[in-house]
Image (cartoon, rainbow, N blue to C red; front, side, top):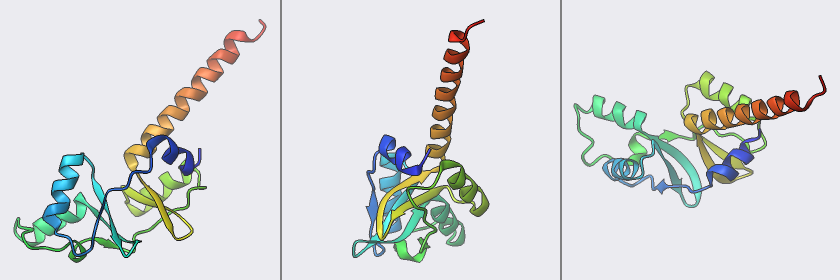
Length: 144
């Protein structure tokens, strides 16, 4: 299954924040939307990713405070990206190898979506369930 197909099923809604935005605002959005990352956009281009991992590191470094902290101070700058025609197994491998939970999917210079490790797990599970049903149907209908 290609990443393009996962994005088609998941939808391509992107929730973004500006690099000069406040981390506390980003945390509020992530909590309200029940998401683990925000795309950081600058002048219409992907500038970085803000995830709960960066927020936790900032809280640890600053003795529990993110007051007055800007997104660009802690975001992942120039995050690793992947093309939409890549197969899900390759994405899974890249995510595991680089310890990435949220991967921007880019076609040319255009960000078309973000896939989480959860999205990948769900897609693999659904694909396996479909294949399982097809095989059971084939076995059931085969002549004895």
